[in-house]
Amino acid sequence: MQRYSPDGLLLYFPKKSFEKWFDLYGCINDSDKFTGSLESRDSLPYAEHIIQKRFRFIKRGVKERRQETVSRNPHTRIEGAEFVTVKK
Image (cartoon, rainbow, N blue to C red; front, side, top):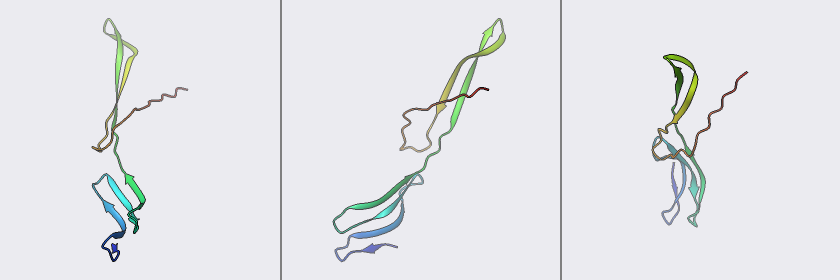
């Protein structure tokens, strides 16, 4: 449900979806100020590649671990990812 001022300004919009990644809730008052919130959704597939140590074709231990994180949202940039291993 949208409401307009006598000047034709949009005063209230409950939900506006720009894409499947964003939702916008809020209102614009008479002085063109926006009050509301922007919700962003994302999907982050994570893959870990483990490279084994080898000595004469015998695998012993882990030589290296590589982590790869990809964002499905085209508007997201991943600044960094942290991997934590807890051993008992």
